[in-house]
Amino acid sequence: MKRISLIMILLLVSAALFANGAKTGKEGELVLAHGKPEIDSQIKAYAAAWGEENGVEVIIITCGGGNCDLGQMLKADYAAGEMPDIFAINGKEDFLEWEALAADLSGESWVEETDVAFMHNGKTFGFPVSIEGWGMAYNADILAEAGVDPKSLVNLSGYREAFAKIDSMKEELGLDSVVSMASGPEMFWVVAHHNFNSLLSNGLPYGDASVAEDLLAGEVDSKRLSEYADWVELLFEYADKAILTTGSYDSQVGAFAIGKAAFLHQGNWADPNLIGANANFNMAFAPHGSTEAATDGIFVSAPSFYLVNSKSVNADLAKKFLDDLALSPAGANYMVKEALMIPAFGNIDLRPDGQLSSSVQDWMAEGKIYSWNQYLFTGEFRDKTLSPIYNQFANGQIDKAEFIRLMTEAFESQ
Image (cartoon, rainbow, N blue to C red; front, top):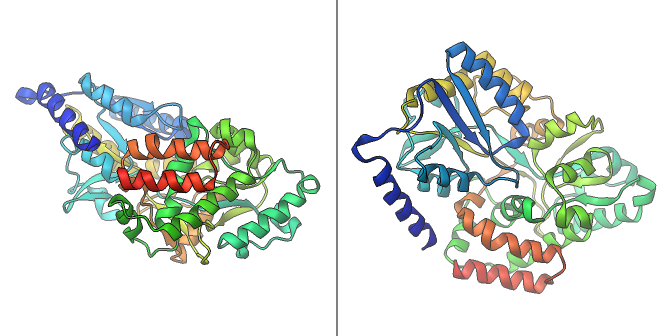
């Protein structure tokens, strides 16, 4: 009901803004809005060079990471008639909000080079920003010193045993905590997006959205939810409480980077931060342990997609920007060597330097991957309904039984 209301509002605003074919955007100026602050400097450098070469000023607006909500910013821009020429979405629910503005990109040259473009009703609308993945990142050197085999990290019992053993050796290993985990107000996406997907996808064949679809219909698998709650409780129990409840992205990743935590609940997008912090220990991903049954994969997909604003006077220029990004040597160098991203395009044979990105590619090569299904839910449901439940649990305001009850109620009443 809330999504329908939002769509109605957008349609009404659209009618006012675009009556008589009104256009947005400024000639000679290309604006791109995205939500990945970890690549802010890299994309700005690439955009500046591309703009100089093409005789246009490219303005990059970065809004994300907990300090800025891209969706809310775009809605404000839309109401003001100042939409970017290119803007990022996360998935289906985001696309449905902006479908009326999205240019059909089916005929673009880069489409043939990727299998993960965003498609709707048989047409291509979204340019995949990269390939990303996450499991539980681990410091392999610390695990070796503690006598923990990463291959045992496949289910709840494996993680319980490993966490308990490492916790008993914290002083010897120089650790502040076993796992660097965040669930504070500005880090809601760690739990209500990425960890939430453990409930939705862990252990299921790639593309299987049955658990998510059941939850969207208000049907809750109590056994799966109970085991998932055990997983959340385990992570919270062995986390540094300050980072868990009030920490920032930098403090969460930083604790892992300097060897003060054996595990990190983040994805390969942390590679630039880890390299910048000279984290030269061996690291890789293990599966999430959100079920009693063993699982053997990590979560891999395109994290976001660029849409071209079809109402912009710069729509053709925006398409050229994306075409060059995917198909030019400079675009490939930016994505892989500068931004340290895994490219979503088959024509690019460069490999990123980051260890976590390399681990993602290894899991992909073995076909051991699980889907991202969290974006089948609305941003409002994830961020406004689920996030506070995780936060209360992290702060000790509710126990596991209450966490399960509140999560169940949220699914049944959405």
